[in-house]
Image 1 (cartoon, rainbow, N blue to C red):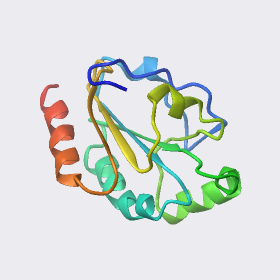
Image 2: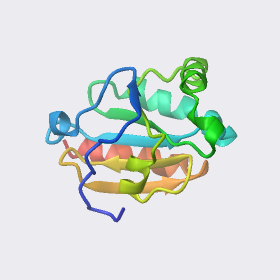
Image 3: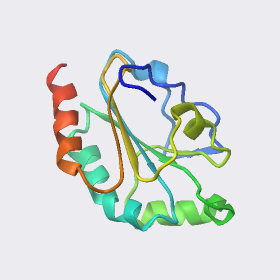
Amino acid sequence: MKLHEQMPELVGATTWLNGRFDRADHIGKKPTLIHFWSISCGLCKEMMPYMNNFRDRYRGELNVIAVHMPRSKDDMDLEKIKKAARAHDITQPIFVDNDLKLSDAFDNEYVPSYYVFDRDGRLRHYQAGGSGMKMLIKRVKRVLDEM
């Protein structure tokens, strides 16, 4: 995805865990942080407390959505995904992307990766990997300040 592009429709999930997120219900209301992760990604698990902090700290101001992107056939096991979600306190909606439909719509190749959309659904920031958490915090605060 390129900066300022509209958030793709969140369709094609193998399943949703912890509820659903319908883009149309949220555009125009508040910003959204979408993070891609995988159960086989150690760095994703290390970064999950930061995502949970965003979810808890900005509850009511920021949508936080997890997208589970498998990196292997073994990552597609729904019971393993549920177990990892419980173990890492992922209570936000999880789009299980076993068919990689959303990953393709985002042109996303990496986990972890983070997409910050403003309240109008335009991409304002993208980053991948574990470094740069200060930058992600800064970008989230910027889109929240615009509300």
